[in-house]
Image 1 (tube, helix red, strand yellow):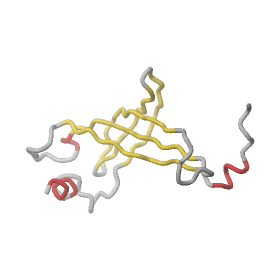
Image 2 (cartoon, one colour):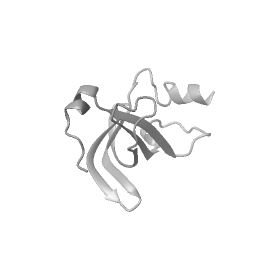
Image 3 (cartoon, helix red, strand yellow):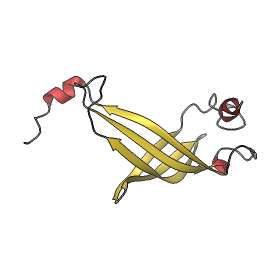
Length: 117
């Protein structure tokens, strides 16, 4: 029931707005990792936000020949950016995270010089 509520027209409206995007304007190294400062677009409206980034630089297990980086991004958004309705099961501040795998085509990694020893 909660899943239907979250994707429905009263909240995220995934049919009308199938994409949530983040455009980074600045990347900052902090003692606990990395932070990206930028704009989070939800339901067609941009909001300034800071998100935590965590990168896994190990080769992907399934395809060790592909140079891949797994990036986990976490941010806190204000539910009023999404809906004016009061949703009893949700707080005003919502923690979200996403997992992104960045990879390079095999021909791109083959043309790069080997790393310095």
